[in-house]
Amino acid sequence: MTAAVVLFTSDLRLHDHPPLHAALKAADEVVPLFVLDPGIHAAGFDAPNRRAFLADCLSDLDASLRRRGGRLVVRAGPVVREVCAVAAECGATEVHMAAGVTAYAHRREERLRDGLDAGGVALRVHEAVVTALAPGAVTPSGSDHFAVFTPYFRRWSEESLRKPLPAPRTVRVPDRVRGEPLPDRADVKGISPGLPDGGESVGRDRFSRWSRSGLARYEDRHDDLAGDATSRLSPYLHFGALSPVELVHRARERGGPGADAFVRQVCWRDFHHQVLAARPEASSADYRTRRDQWRGEDDAAEDIAAWRDGCTGYPIVDAAMRQLRHEGWMHNRARLLVASFLTKTLYVDWRIGARHFLDLLVDGDIVNNQLNWQWVAGTGTDTRPHRVLNPLVQAKRFDPDGAYVRRWVPELTDVEDNRVHEPWRLPAGQRDGLGYPAPLIDLADGLARFKHARGRD
Ligand code: FAD
Figure 1: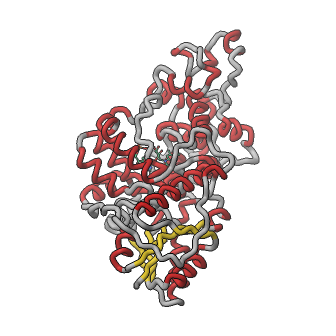
Figure 2: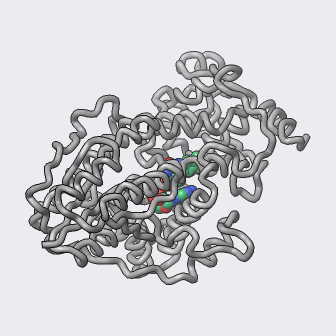
Figure 3: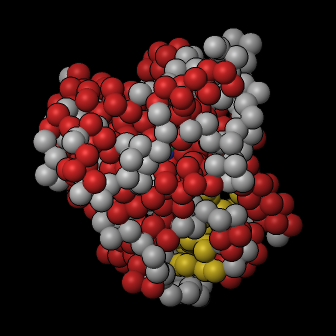
């Protein structure tokens, strides 16, 4: 009887899972393994919202494996130690896992390879599991990665993606391998009240429903803040409960401008992955320095607190920041404008904003979060790095009747449409009775400071 181990990381699904598929082909018995790694905790990446969502994903994975005659083995401890121990317990000759792109994932892979090698066990790393196309699969001439999205998208679109794999029918797990109890969402404190349920089953169901009801209109409606018309699949993609390869195939099968626009967004995710794979230091250092002397916690503490709490006096910014706290998620247009407000209008270091997002976002990941923050801050891959989003212009364009603001800022529920984005224009008596703060900063002052900082005044 031969055995193999499949180490699940950011790929918590059974459908379209190349490592599992390969392990089942290579061995009679397979141990589907997830390790609760204290390294993730030490690095501060296990925020409550993501811990709760992870617990859902693991329960769902376990239930799906049980329906196929298997189970998920969960172990707690340093990942190398646990994987080596499980491989020894079941007599595995191979361990399969998905390739990662972060510095943490690379270190983990190297250490695993060394640890397993010592025991004569081979590590097999599979590409295009976490992303649709492997980072580095397409490169421009003379560089190891694309630094601009549009040419990347063009090349990416020309590549044929691998065919999605079906979920296995049966998985035989050896009895002799012991596991720990699965983590439970109910044990996680401090989660956002509106946090969605995690897991492959919920994610697949959401995609199926949304692809019938929302995909066709995605192109026209994806920026409508109140319409909430995007897929909300990001947390399922983040945990790998859904396969990006499968989503792209299924969207393309449906076809049309909505599907094209959706596939383009999924490509943004691959784009950031290939940037970070080539430049792992961009998770904390400027990808392209603009020699900013950012304001930080010492000189902008009150501004930062107002931004985090959704009390800046700019209703569209505050609505978005309150949505983040309540749901652990925020609409992309809202992410763009609150990030621009913090980094450009308030001229605060992008890392402070990125940290706050990572503390709350259920889809928060080093790749997409840090590189999108850098994109907005103008230290990343945006070809117009000094542009500043005016929150009033954005509000009037993407929330024209104020429905998004009213949903999240109850102080403004009764304010008429033409003042809901600018409550400071209300007569003093009415304004003072709202209990809503005055604007933290004059937009013109913020713009002047930023232009000066970037030497563009
Ligand atoms: P849809 O509009 O339905 O798009 C489909 C999928 O495409 C998304 O689920 C996502 O996986 C991908 N996608 C869409 N836009 C982007 C983008 N700009 N960059 C990368 N992938 C994208 N996304 C994360 O997954 N994790 C993060 O930590 C994260 N942090 C962000 C921080 C900032 C400052 C900004 C501006 C954007 C960030 N994004 C992040 C990207 C984007 O906002 C979210 O992916 C999107 O809002 C998720 O909603 P959705 O699933 O409904 O997206």
